[in-house]
Amino acid sequence: MRLLVTGGAGFIGSNFVHHVVANTDDHVTVLDALTYAGNRASLAGVPADRLTFVHGDITDAALVSSLFAKADAVVHYAAESHNDNSLDDPRPFVDTNIVGTYTLLEAARRHGVRFHHISTDEVYGDLELDDPERFTESTPYTPSSPYSSTKAGSDLLVRAWIRSFGVQATISNCSNNYGPYQHVEKFIPRQITNVIRGIRPKLYGAGQNVRDWIHADDHSSAVLTILDKGVIGETYLIGADGERNNRDVVELILTLMDQPSDAYDQVTDRVGHDLRYAIDSSKLRRELGWTPAYSDFEQGLSATIDWYRANEEWWAPAKDATEAIYAGKGQ
Ligand code: NAD
Ligand code: TDX
Image (cartoon, rainbow, N blue to C red; front, top):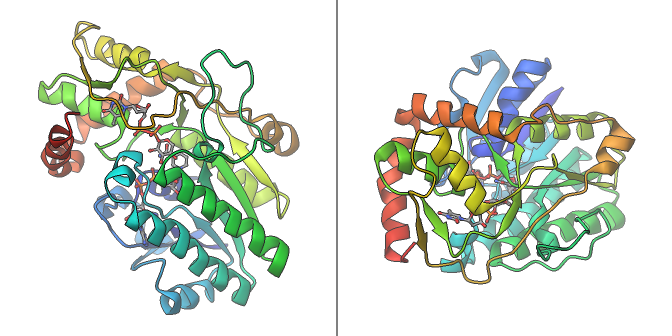
């Protein structure tokens, strides 16, 4: 199969490309604008005959159309992905997440190409800490931030293009990913690289907020399963039963890195900070037979710490600038 992967130089997209190359015979074309979040080095090691890299923007309709003409299937990861950035400047989120997804859908319509849209559990808003319910495919959309509202908008565009134009698409909404190649602006890599640099980890507010962690490689295997066996028009939630509050995660990182577990700072909380995300992925498991491989979060986190220790040349160029932005906001 000839796969086109948008955002394949980002965190989850690059993990997906490595997963595809290791587990299939598919050829991958990556379309990526190499924003601050994209890094060509995240694709190092992929054999040249398995990968074509195209530096370009998903809002470029002519370029997108020419690439869809040569693809059997498209997996759409490209996005502005960081909630904190969306609070500072929402514009690029509207451009990439909404106009970019629209541009891809028009190409999918024209070329009749199978399309898989990658989205997030944040479209469902947040849950109370003591709510026994988790998000399911029928939970109403109530996004909180500019980021999550543009992802919700992109999901709705995909649904409309399926119903109105018969586009052959599926959607997945995944919980928080961790693993190699994640930008140091995000929670887990920020704290790991802080400890490596001798900076105290930074917890927003009291750290009671809960995220449902999944290893990026499990996200990739779920997406391949949906591409292979998913029913056109359906939405699948992806999660690995990994709920933890932020304080517990920071303390675990400190312990795994041989530091006192209270050696962190509490900093200014995120505006409108979603309290809790939790995914019920039973539809994907029951109907498509998927199961995650990383059942032990502590083991996955430990391997991730090892990766950041061994790959300082990958993350160091972005570290100082990222911390300067946070410092300017008291975070
Ligand atoms: P990321 O920010 O690490 O990577 C995004 C990639 O998209 C980068 O390589 C960037 O250069 C590229 N990109 C941005 N704008 C572009 C444009 N206009 N044209 C072409 N390329 C562009 O993001 P990520 O964390 O890997 O997230 C990937 C996808 O997964 C996103 O759609 C996100 O909403 C979704 N998602 C992320 C998580 C998570 O925990 N990170 C969880 C669920 C869903
Ligand atoms: O320094 C920090 N301290 C802190 O306490 C940072 C950067 C974050 N946090 C908190 C905020 C969140 O409760 O940690 C939690 C995780 O934060 P992020 O890594 O920014 O992720 P989140 O906002 O939960 O969104 C992530 O998961 C869903 C991805 O960035 C999204 O792209 C995805 O859709």
